[in-house]
Each structure stands twice: as structure tokens, then as C-alpha cells.
Image (tube, rainbow, N blue to C red; front, top):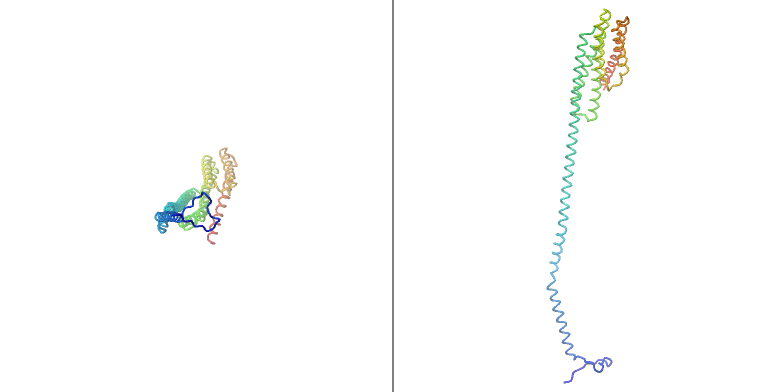
Length: 291
């Protein structure tokens, strides 16, 4: 049987010596190739996971990646919150500690002022025992003002916790200054009493006793100046009294004729300081009553 050729166009006629496969063989080869391609496509579809499965895998992969990040973010957030809470607690604790320190310092300051007022009372009592009749009125006025000041001190101590820190501190400092001035005033009254007794002794030519009285007055003035160490208002007046005491002591030791007048100068200087302190305390009380 001769091979069958399908020639559509003479131009496509095979050249001499070229073998052309029969049409049936070509069709068979094409079917074989298509079959192989179909089988390979089926294998690929079988190996490929379903769309839903692929989406699940991708979702799980995303979770696997994001989970550590979310966990770290949660941990950091919790740590930050805990740190803020610790900072707030430390701030509150520090504030409480500062408040307690201020309150403790204020309590100690008021205790010191109470002690100073007690010393002032004792000084006034001793001055009353030793003093001449001339200073009794000054002692009485000092005792009255001391009692008022003591009441102000206790009132301020009770109300300190109800005030702001600044207001409480200002009240404490103001009262502390007044208490120190009161103590200095009581010591100066004692010094004046001793100087008065020195005048009496000098008038009787009892120079030894006069010298002892002036030595006591000098020591009392030294203590009064220590009370006013931070209060420069009376520096000049205190220095004048110190000079007068030194000159009076020298005159007494030398049995000088003007010894009496030198001691009188001590009394004059003492009166000036004591009077100034008394007026200032009266003004403080008047300001408080006017409020």
C-alpha cells in the first residue's frame, strides 16, 4: 500500500529526498504528547494543596511570625506600666518622707522655742528676786508678753499640719525670731538688775561686790547676744552696752570716782535695748489682733 500524502499547496510539497511522516502517525504522536501533558497537569493539581489549605497555612505562618512580636509588645507594655507605678510609688514615698522630715523639723523647732521660753521665765524670775523696785514694771510687762507669745507658739504648733509647707515654715520662723528676742530681753533684764546692784555696791564703796555684779551682767549680755546672733537689728545697741560694761568694770577695779556714773551708763544702754524689744513685741501682737 502506498503512503497517503495530503498536499494542500504545491508550494508545500516536500523536496526531493525529504521524508514526510504519514498523517496517521503524526496524529498518533500528537495524541501521545497531549496525553503526557494531561497526565503531568493532573499530577501538578494533585500535588498542589487546596486553596483553603493554602490560606490556612499562610495564616498560621503569619501567626507564627507575629506571635513573638505581640508577646514582646505585651511584655514591654506591662513592664512600662509597672515601671510607671513604681515611679509613682517612689514619688509618693519620697513626698511622704519629705513631709515627715519637714514635720519632724517643725516639731523640733517648736520644742526648741518652748525650751527658750522656759529659760526666759526663769531669767525673769531671778531678775525679779534680785532687781530693785525700778525695773519691776518692766519685768511685769515682759512676763505678760511672754505668756501671750507662749500661747501663740502652742496655737501655731497645733495648726502647723493644716497649713501649707510654706505657710507653716513662715509661721515657725517668725515665732522662732520672737522667742529668741524674748529670751534675749529676759537676759538683758537680768543684766540690768545686776548692774543696778553694782551701782548700790559702788555707792557703799563695796567695790568687790560691784565688780562681781558687773561680771555677772557681762556674762548675761554675752548670752543675750548669742540669742540675737542671726538678728542684726540690735548689733549696734549691744556693742554700745558691751563697751559701757568694760569701762564700768575698769572704773570699779580702779576704785575710780566716776565708777558710779560708768555703771549708770550700762543701765542706760540696757534700757534702750530692752525698750526696743518691748515695743517690737507689742507691735507684733497688735498686728495679730488686727487680723
